[in-house]
Each structure stands twice: as structure tokens, then as C-alpha cells.
Image 1 (cartoon, rainbow, N blue to C red):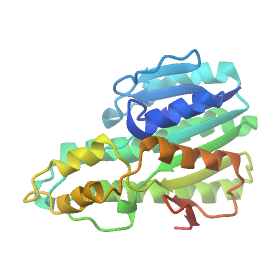
Image 2 (image 1 turned 135 degrees about the vertical axis):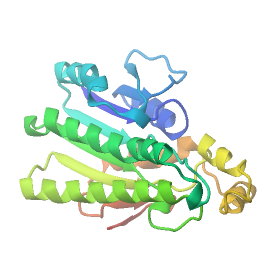
Image 3 (image 1 turned 180 degrees about the vertical axis):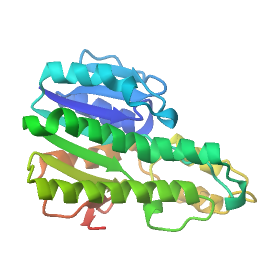
Image 4 (image 1 turned 45 degrees about the vertical axis):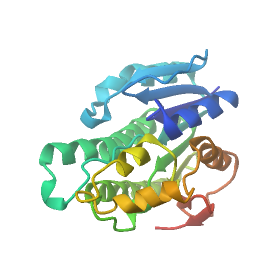
Length: 247
């Protein structure tokens, strides 16, 4: 049996990934605050609030996976929040903490538990962390989001280096910068007051110029990676150009 864990599964890219992996025969555990409109014998929904992440909330999921004894587990850390948005001086500690919990703490903690449970069993593990071009490009008004994605990328780089030293060839990691997707996050940013969010015009231009891609198309591009040997091609995969690079 092949298993997949997908965070942020309620809509957008996460939901598209879940549907396509189910079609490919995977057993999917979907984690998010609200459930997607998805009924399938091999889909298991886990209610999760990553803004206040607790390891113990997922003990049942890990126990189920261990009992199922999959030969392969994919972990797609897709969940993310963009708030707080706006000028630096408007940010407050509680919202900064929630964003870092969702965008950095949750994917790192889930990855760590996956390794603890499966890495030494020889199970094939594939970890994909969904990042953003904002990790490397300065976007006024998105400082917290940018640092969270940059932190996630460097955490992934650290894990790759650790796995090289341990010599565990059953563990692979990849960062995906998925490009501009037609999601609720995009529509939310377009609706913001341009006087409060300096980058608002740029997000509106994405929509007006037809630059947004459907989540289903992006999911297909990402899943192509799961059937390739990408270990020698770089740590970062950027869409839509499908380019590999290193941090």
C-alpha cells in the first residue's frame, strides 16, 4: 500500500493533490481545519488547526499508518497562511506566531514524526514542502509570509544535508515553488486596500493578465515528480517553468 499525507486539503492545491493521488491508488490522509467535499474509501480526513500545532493531535493518524505498513509515504506540506498582510508596524505577536506555527512549525514537526516512525524501517519516504517565490523575492507587505517560506526552505536544506550524512537513501526531500495559482489566497490579497497593502496591484495584475494557473494543473506538475528520479537535479523545483535549482 502507498500512503500520502496532505496538509491544507480542504480546497485549492491540497484538494487537487488529494483527488489525483486517490485516482493513482494512494491511501490519503488529509489534514485541514475544514473537510473537503470528498468521499472515497481510501480518504481519511483529520481535523487540524496548524496555527496552534500540537504533536499529540496526530498520534491516531501515525498509529493507523504504522498498522497499515505502507511501502511508501508521501508527505506534502501544503498548508499555509499569508496573514498578517500590511505595513511592518501593523504586525502583532499573536498573528506572527500563528503564521510561523502554520508555515514552519507544522511542516517541520510532521516531517520529524514521519522520520521517527518510518525512516529506519526502510519505508520509502518522499517529503515535499510547498514554498513560494516570496521566499526569495521581497514583496512589500508580506514580510511574515516571506520569512516563513524562507525558513521552511532552509529547514528542508538542513534535512537534506542530515540525510546525506546518515546515508538513508529511502528518504528524499524537495521544495516546490508552485507559481501563481488561482486560489482563495490570491482572491483575498486582491481584495485588500492598496493603501494598506503595497503589493495589492501586483496580485490584481496576475488575475487581469491571465497569469493564474488552475490548482489541478499545478497538482499534475507536482505529481510528475513522484515518478521521476530527481535526486541529482536540485532541491528546488519552480513552476510553471519546471526548473530545478539549489538554494
